[in-house]
Length: 309
Image (cartoon, rainbow, N blue to C red; front, side, top):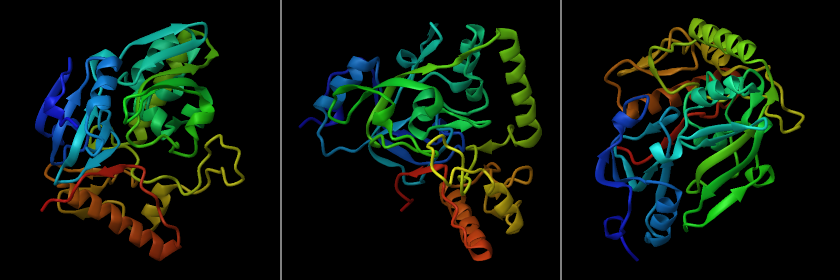
């Protein structure tokens, strides 16, 4: 079976691509290959032709990701311009997987569709679907209608809510299946009112979160969280930031990494952190919280790749 460089593509294929500049935390080693497909057909043909033994990892804008210092083996797939369209019609919004969540929220509001929960979520639509992203009590699962995706074997699928297995900050989507487009439904709303609501959300976020620092959003999931799954444990009483703060870990550094002094659940690169320092500090936080409370925090940030050798 062909290796990546033996496959004809219309997109861009780069060998030994440094990934640190593609993640919000600005850490990580190289990918063996980075493939940026031209469109869905280009992606499907590439995956169908690629040796099935070669691992594939879909990467969005790197907003919720630590790439380890040794990099990623196999092919990293990153969707770009061919996947960032947004259209609104009949109370529904169709968005490419590379469209930024904030842009989708704004376009929807202009069309009188309420997807305001997306406005302050960092990242793109593909990641929002995969991770059931949510904010202010509203989650992707609450608005999801369908998605298109390409499997590792190159098959193009249409997925409905039952196919997704939505849960708190996760889905059942296989890790090497790549979402290319999603359709959302939202309640009707006045564009000016929706715009004002989003501005209020932004103001609150800027007041409470370190938006100018080098972070990857929330580091750990809340131990119990509302997720629209109907489970009895869907409460939002326990906050990860409070557990970290009470355990005395807010502001604690490790090399160039620190648990942010403004918000305890934001792991931060102060400028020269390695992925190992960031992940190591996160694990130290988990250990301390477990020792003090018996609660085992779960990572919300995805950690991928190999440690530095």
